[in-house]
Amino acid sequence: MTMALTGKTAIVTGAVGGIGAAIVRTFLAQGAQVSMIDVDQARGHAFASQLAAEGHKVAFVDADVSSFEACQRAYERITAELGGADILVNNVGISPKTNGRALRVYEMPPAEWDKVVDVNLNSVFYMTHLATPHMVQQRAGRVINMSSVAGKAYCDIVAAHYAATKAGLLGLTRHWAAELGEFDITVNGLAPGRISTPLLKSVPQEINDAVTRVTSLGRLGTPEEVADACLFFASDQARFVTGQVLDVAGGWLMT
Ligand SMILES: NC(=O)c1ccc[n+]([C@@H]2O[C@H](COP(=O)([O-])OP(=O)(O)OC[C@H]3O[C@@H](n4cnc5c(N)ncnc54)[C@H](O)[C@@H]3O)[C@@H](O)[C@H]2O)c1
Image (cartoon, rainbow, N blue to C red; front, side):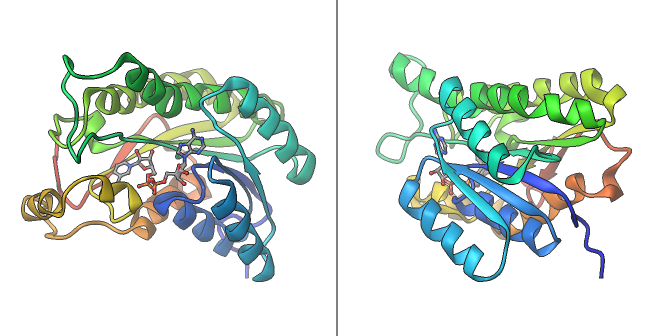
């Protein structure tokens, strides 16, 4: 049986977190080989060993994607092992809180601002800069950026650094879609709502309960539901879709 991603190679950043791991598993189930990048060395190696034992073709590189040099080293190692990527999923993202609360502008240490910009936004440029020459050369490719509904609408759970970087991904998605279309490279994004992953544990349970009450579908999303939408953008079914950011939010924060 031919699967949606047979013969394709993907890179996923933040690959061992809740949504990243679900994307990795979904892509593998559709016949792709997947290179995983994550700063969490122990969990990354354990996840990679488990997937390899299940018979999947995977590579894991531990790297902090907030540094261009680290991305460059990771990309070189990945391509040496699995070749250039057909699909890049810029999934990595952090949303720091202090005592479960998003800091306001007058409270936020500039170092925290810089860290979020480096991880959530700059890494997306670094990885796309590194991965697209191969896609341009082969005149085919898919770039998928993990934004958030908090990049499209005001969301009091997150801080401004998170909102700004996720909004930045909307601009990057549109701009790169225009720049890269002539090479048959599509660039799309996902805007998850409240998804049940470790990232959610940084806020008190009552906040997640409050979000559930104002979500049309009346529940939090699962990482697999985000991964399914990601698979659509990566697949041939989405070949004429570019520059779009799809909400996967169960009707929360509809704009
Ligand atoms: N969970 C949600 O409700 C939600 C909602 C909207 C958007 N998102 C976005 O989805 C993406 C994945 O989120 P998640 O919920 O799976 O988060 P998560 O915290 O479960 O996973 C994030 C992963 O990124 C890795 N990581 C963090 N900093 C890194 C760095 N500097 N270099 C390399 N790896 C690093 C972590 O080790 C972790 O494995 C993020 O971009 C997040 O902003 C999540």
